[in-house]
Image (cartoon, rainbow, N blue to C red; front, side):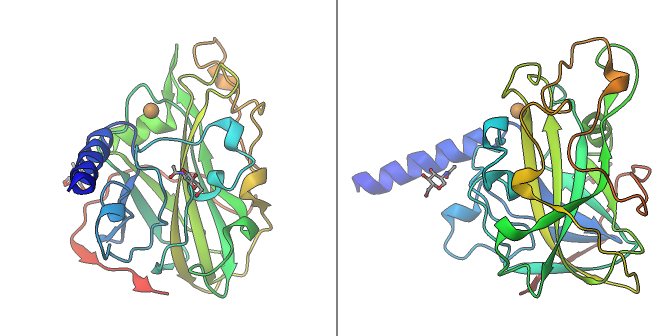
Length: 270
Ligand SMILES: *[C@@H]1O[C@H](CO)[C@@H](O)[C@H](O)[C@H]1NC(C)=O
Ligand SMILES: *[C@@H]1O[C@H](CO)[C@@H](O)[C@H](O)[C@H]1NC(C)=O
Ligand SMILES: [Cu+2]
């Protein structure tokens, strides 16, 4: 009985902390809603839904700090494990990635999307072998003072970010690594906050491009100019989105808009 009541207490504590920061709740593709992994409930229920979002131990909706950027936690969040299902998507489709409401206004920073080929299966691929290439990366956008950042635009669009799967991307299985980096404390070494979230996609199409990428553990260093960055300084215009250079044959970010889901689907196991 003692153990049972402790479990209840930790469950309540877990639920209570889920208000801060955030995680991706769902994606919407062509009006269809696909659930993500819910770190606030999945660990506590016997048979959590099999979703395309990777499982991770970010129970507090927290972040990866720069001192862990060379560890596997930066790949798809803390102790992440492969999603057991995937979402079919056509090259050229846009994916509306919706975070839990509401991304905190103080957490200005870039929004970055990567893809990595899984080869045969994203369900079984070893995450430490995934090589990520950048699909888009938006940082400072406009305005004086702190100005408007990609994360602010995400808030303006119902906590969603629209990413386009390049039309010329080769078909195959990919992990989509979507990430917000919050810069409110990034002026201090180890002060930036990375919130990576991964989804498995099966991309169909006639494209042929499959850029080479870099390992997740090699994406960033704690001293990169886009990571160690004073958000309260005078030079936002010169902000450099961190990570490898984007493949030039891909469109960069697309115009943002919120997506309204008109149907719901469940991810395909495997
Ligand atoms: C991740 O796994 C390690 C090793 O099992 C464990 O010590 C640590 O507490 C885990 N982290 C979280 C956030 O659950
Ligand atoms: C914002 O997202 C929520 C959750 O998906 C949805 O219920 C609501 O209709 C959306 N609002 C707008 C204005 O799109
Ligand atoms: Cu936060």
